[in-house]
Length: 163
Figure 1: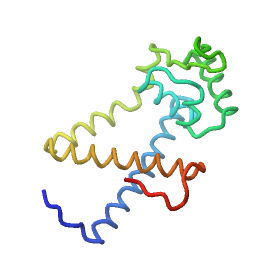
Figure 2 (figure 1 turned 135 degrees about the vertical axis):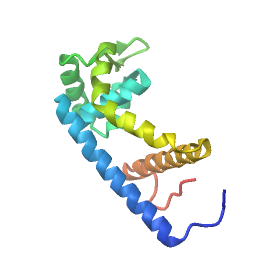
Figure 3 (figure 1 turned 180 degrees about the vertical axis):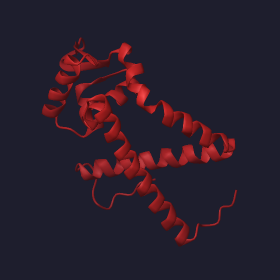
Figure 4 (figure 1 turned 120 degrees about the vertical axis):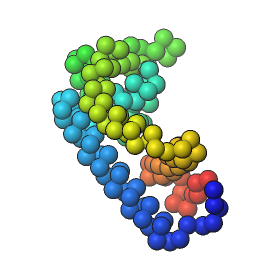
């Protein structure tokens, strides 16, 4: 694998492709949420819970970038629809633990099935080294997003760098 710097035009092409993929991903998420009768924030919350099992309401607020009041309304709606359960944290009664109802997971996965099959087919043509490069790239992009979210939320100064 070459360690020569990428030319500016290749970097510009990569940035353009990344922005377009991000835009299409967002449009795709809106379409899935609409099909399920949910909002995108509802879907983000449920996806997060599917990944982590349970989370506090505060963690859901951070993940969805919603206020605690908006999260309270969302969780009430999702609980009434049978997607989640909530209970007080026995260690800290002020905190609420939110858990995705396991019997709803298949329903939430269904709209992604065709996309997942096509993505798997696409990746089949990649070497293990190619896939690991993509994993490292996504990991680094996630770290950058998290750092920028901290900065935008007031946690870091404008000039903070990300390693």
